[in-house]
Amino acid sequence: GAGVSQSPRYKVAKRGQDVALRCDPISGHVSLFWYQQALGQGPEFLTYFQNEAQLDKSGLPSDRFFAERPEGSVSTLKIQRTQQEDSAVYLCASSPRPGQTNEKLFFGSGTQLSVL
Amino acid sequence: RKEVEQDPGPFNVPEGATVAFNCTYSNSASQSFFWYRQDCRKEPKLLMSVYSSGNEDGRFTAQLNRASQYISLLIRDSKLSDSATYLCVVVDQTGANNLFFGTGTRLTVIP
Image (cartoon, rainbow over all chains, first blue to last red; front, side, top):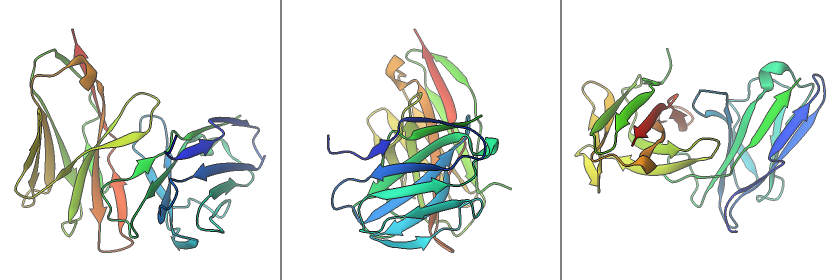
């Protein structure tokens, strides 16, 4: 389909392991966002890209979290030395316009990360 | 204090009922407001924007009260398919222009 695609759908990691989560936004979408959604909570902002530029990473919870979008399309969220508190659904969203005020974000189905 | 506060519910209502959710926000300079819907184990999807004058989309009505800093969503004639979590979203345009999501209000419509 033409929607936002995320992989893997599920990831189980041992504590201390590094993980990489992939997001394929809708083709041509300028803006890309990563959110973290813990069980029973709303999505929490992690970081924002406009094309390949990471304009806002204020939501990344620690320096173990790193995101990139080197060619302005596919993005990867990397978590180093995973901890149990990192367990959550990681949602990627894209939008055709720049800026973070767009009302219509197109979300992927998310990657559910479980750290044991 | 969280940027956006919502009653998590759950709200259990019979089919055909009218139900309303409120959401309060802390930043008085916020300019944009939305309601998203999230089904169980699915991604959030935009339901509707919220305008100062209020807006309606079929059985759904959204209202904004800037003085009291809250937004509301009214669902009339509830259907079973309305069962979902409804997320309030506020855009903070004074800083990094983030979209802030509430925790969501869970609605179950009962036959």
